[in-house]
Length: 226
Image (tube, rainbow, N blue to C red):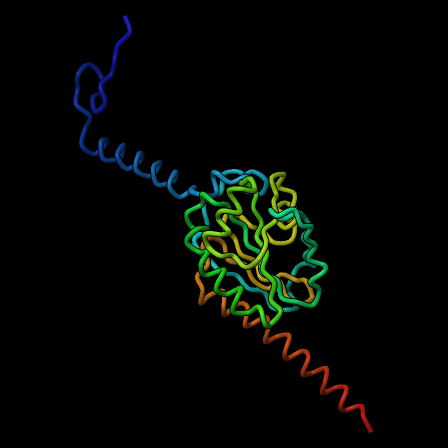
């Protein structure tokens, strides 16, 4: 005859000791937390391409000094309106890349800030480009309309774009935001939701590098005049 064991009991009708019960509760709680933390990353096709089993990012920021940067970065693909995108056409401009998909809560939370910063730096020639591995065109376009995104997003169902980027800068979560300098090199990365002030600072820092470089070049040219 098969015996049925009632949760909270051990052996033949004995009650689980309090210490053991507390350990069991803690184990179940930890397992539940892991499921929550997996969040967007566990559902994302990007996660399947980049690194199976990672958890969603925590907004951590990493920057690289000019001499320590990897690249150059080139992204090609088709946006959700059917237009071909090639970031080589934006050479010598600061580029901000953002991975997202419509059902991802932190992607939705950060979308207004991304749209605002994109508009704020448009006059400075800063380009923004989204990368979406999950959504069909109607879903992605609805998201873009909802948040008034002033920049395109590439459809990346195959995960090719994310995989290529991962060879230069590990993405590790959705969303991830990457700032690329005017030479196409990775200057900064934010894993998880990015807030507006952080993104503004990262973009301003890279723009300032370019301004200093142009100033130094002009000074060198002037010193050569007779």
